[in-house]
Amino acid sequence: MNQGARIKSLRKERGLTQAELAELSGLSIRTIQRMENNEVNPSTFSLKMLSKALEIDLKALNSQKKNSFHLNLSKSLMNIINPILGNFTIRKVFVSSIMLIIVFSLYLWLPTKSVTDYSPNDHQYSVATINCGDESVCDIEVTKKEKDGKILWQHTFGGSSYDRAGEVISTKDGGCLVVGSTSSFGKGNYDALLLKINVDGELIWQETYGGFFNDYGKKISRLSDSNGYSIEGTHQACDTPNVSNECIDFFWKFEIDESGKLKG
Image 1 (cartoon, rainbow, N blue to C red):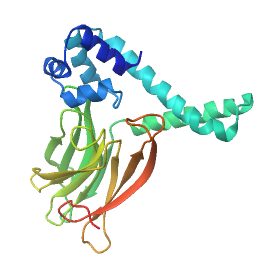
Image 2 (image 1 turned 90 degrees about the vertical axis):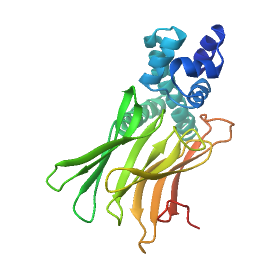
Image 3 (image 1 turned 180 degrees about the vertical axis):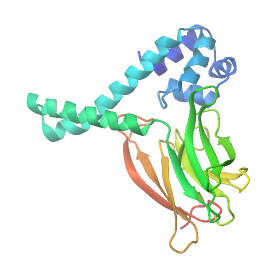
């Protein structure tokens, strides 16, 4: 039984609706639904809250989470590579080696990262993904520093689920734009997220981009005519109703105006 099915089974055994489990655990109904449908990988904090609400050992849920992730990743890679290389033993050894390299690369991509950009007055903006696994789940942290490194302010942004930092870029008014990914807001499992933050660290507005499946925002740059910005990331297409091994990620690039609205 996969992790989502187990959570659903435990909930029903206790006679709880998704809304009741959400109330008991302190998680959103949307997060509960995604976990039961195996559409997201729950954070340690989410599993901890569920374990308390469902009265089950946290280690059991954590173990299933890791096994499910690596099993699904391995199956996906094998489905892609096997038709190309065939099924001979020596080729399978080669495939296994390639899989280990890819898994290790993904592991390096997931941890906290920080990206820096300088504003016109030499103030330094940086962003990082923080709080993964504690009471704030995953959040986006934005820091503004003086040229000498002195911190002017440091604020955290995000919702009740997963929010990851991509890049930050300064704006003409001295503030900044932060691009990233979110499962707290938007239309789908993950959406590209854009935050507009003013010079004092206050959130002015936020926009999300994407459809029902997993869409990620990773890079942002100014357009050559200085009339807006270009955002790069990945867009997911699936032949199934929900995220599955049949889904494919494509390079994604789109343009926005100064207010965050799509151009064209």
